[in-house]
Length: 300
Image (cartoon, rainbow, N blue to C red; front, top):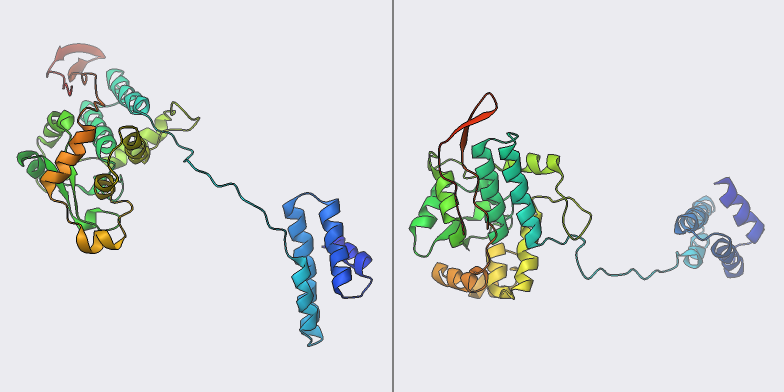
């Protein structure tokens, strides 16, 4: 503040005019290159003029602040997100889950549950917190018993409270059937809290950018891979409940489940995310594999 006061006095000598304000402004712009420095000097001067205006009951002092505005800058507009999520990233997450189970760092049921969250999220783009964590086992039972298999998401399970249908990809029906076993209708289908904690602790890097994989990247993968396979915008917006605030969606559109599924499968039907067999459940004693109690789950 002392430096600002000295410069302001030396360039104005107590005279308040457009000329002296311009002299002060030019001095600051010439002798300092940082926008932070510019802001400190110019804001001091404007605050001092405001003080003089109150002290002398004369608003003309404050009018000189017009000549002390920060210079405009043109900000570069990013055309793409900094997070690039590819099919290889999804495979990397799945492999990490398999390895964690084989190395006894993850239980079998947790591994299968986390694999289910990963592939369901990567096929549907549903939000982890507001949707996937809220889905009940009964909803998946009803979905897989319907023809075609379509999950009904109710308003309270969506961030924007939009009721919608979500197609169940054929590749994950066997896995989802396994996860449902033993669950009551009102039980949550997935344990998303443990999944999020596991992902944050294991710091899985994305393939194309030096960033760590996060559960929200499953939704980004659906959007970005949807561009690669040229997935239709209307069907995409409906399933992801993203960009559906226009009058068309609020007053005219009402997609039927069979057509939502047919349109979705036209683009995603040939996409296979889990091309490896899920490891078998192994009974372990004193760190030794004693017997295999169930066959592996193959989703190909």
